[in-house]
Image (cartoon, rainbow, N blue to C red):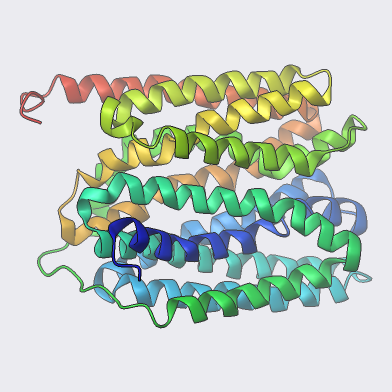
Length: 393
């Protein structure tokens, strides 16, 4: 059992699914909880969501270093324990709802722990799967890892709303805690992979090497960050129902493109795939900005999910090729830093825009970011084609 490359990948990215299900459960519930129940504004609602991504950002270097030196299995199991503990503080936050400042403080601790856990699991699971299946399956590992993560969010968001409606925020907290325990039990008996011996590049060197690629990723991630943080409040501001469905449509389209076009990166190359992806994502965000009804907003969310789907693996394959095998964990960690930066800062920035210009303007802001990403990626593609060794590669 679990002897083929595909089976090895599926077994390992199941751990990614578990940690992102933990992330997805409170995703559609926390913004209105902070805004309506605790009485804080849209900027604070965005900050609560972004706190998780900022914590993940702060821990990326350590996560990559642990995966390279101690092994990806240890990184994954450490992350699952940490993410599970976030459920305890989420439960405390729900019990302190009568004292908003204390509830908010506990909620922020929960988000930070969840962010730390995500960084260890996300980096470790990719490295673990590559180690088990082989480096030739890197693009498949990254693609399927994304299917697991956004599939979990697509399932988790409406499930979290249902749990909240049935039993309140405490039910979500208990579910987060239980999922961490299940994930640890799933990963514990799996065999580890040996670390690659040899000289390792410093994280600083790796970071500067992937900086242009990461910038492109960060710009393209702003759309997801805006949808994840503000689509619930956007729908409420227009008296529309179905905000959780909007998140689910995004996730479903994301997964469908990953499954139907899994070989696109190998056939077309990383940069051409990313260019087309950014163009589709920009169109979707512009539809969300101009939407006059829920149907148009759903179409915009669908296009955004389709466009964003292949961005990470398409550029990620180019990033992994920049470093030796001894530093792949650092490269993945450094590259993903830019994903975290986008999610960490897009919430507060979009919240400030929403405060002054309304929620539709947040999607125009994100569309502008993805349009710039097209230019950055085009520059990287042309630079690569003009290298003397381009023909050899």
